Structures are given as structure tokens and as C-alpha cells.
Length: 112
Length: 114
Picture 1 (cartoon, rainbow over the protein chains, first blue to last red):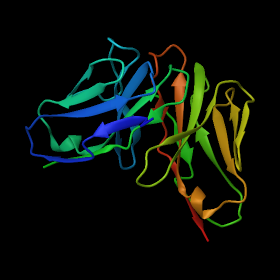
Picture 2 (picture 1 turned 135 degrees about the vertical axis):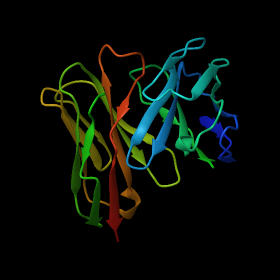
Picture 3 (picture 1 turned 90 degrees about the horizontal axis):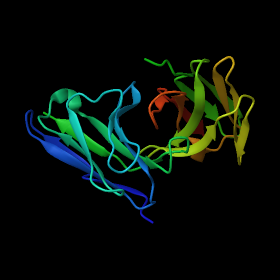
Picture 4 (picture 1 turned 135 degrees about the horizontal axis):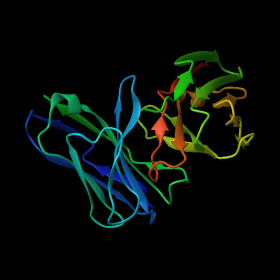
């Protein structure tokens, strides 16, 4: 079991460029989440997917879109990157809402 | 915006010391309180998920208590070891909120000196 995997691990973008962060889990979990982690801010929820075929906004969704491609995969897209989106992005999954979440290794994104 | 506060922000202790830190959260509409341990350059790992007032959970030398009426949880580490050095995060889930939404505190950074 690889658990939760994320690609890429690191990325540098220029302002205005677009990119997609990929996340996959092999634990057959229903729910998946995208967080961003900024110094002094803790983890903040960007989007989540309670189950395959559904997505919902979290605390900081502006500037992002998501796709729950299938039960395994949940991608996060930045359509036009901005320096304010420089952050470490974590994907997580859980069997259900009340159960612990399992985190991926993170993607460190820098937008110049 | 839900207020989840952790204190202290950072803590330095000597190997063998016991330590504890606090997570404060809204006392109304409680659903669950999570604790995670986050080592540098790794991803957060779940320690406990607590749902009942008065809950006490234990994993090895780490234990946690929960008071939902007053809105706090304590995490205790007995006989700290250098490998306990990490950021400890708590996360609150409010009842009635959308499925799976956790609000995280900023974390307590623990450093255990040999």
C-alpha cells in the first residue's frame, strides 16, 4: 500500500501559468481533501470530496478548481497562478467524515 | 470562522520530562476533535479522534483528554524522547457542517533535547 501519493513534490511557476496537482490513494477511501499550509496559518481546507462524483468548497477555494476523477484520484488545478498561492499543498483521504485523515507527502509550490 | 487555538506555540523540554499542551475549540455544536503529529519533512499522522465528552485516549506514552462542555483538549507526553520532537496539530469538526470539514489549529512545536 502506497497510501496517499502526490505529484509533483516541488514546482516553480510564473504568475499566470496553470498547473494541476495530482493526488491518488489506494486505501479505497470515500473522502478526499486538499489543504494548503502556510507559516503561522495551520492547515486550511481548499476543497474536499465526500465521495466519488461530489466536490465542495472548503475555507479557501478562490483561485482553485478540483476534479474527483474516480474513487482513487482527486486533482487540484490552479488556472492562473498568483504569488499568494505559494504554499505547501497536502492531499488527504479518509474512509468517512468522522474518521482520521491520512495525508500525502505534500507539494511545495512557489509562484514567482 | 471557527476559532481553534493551540498553546503554547512552541515548547522546549529535556529528554525524560513530561509535557502537555492545549487545544481550545468552540464548545457548541461539537462533533469530533482530532490530534495529529507532524514531523519535519513528513506528512501529518493521526494520533487520536475523540468524540465524547470525558474521552481519554492513549497511545504508548502519549495520551489525550477531551472536555467538550468547556471546549478544550489536552495532549500529554510522558517521559519525552527526542523522537517525540514534532508539531502537534489539533483539528475540530463542528456538527452540522459539511461532510469532512476540519478546522485545524496552528500547532504546538515540541522540541525534546537529549
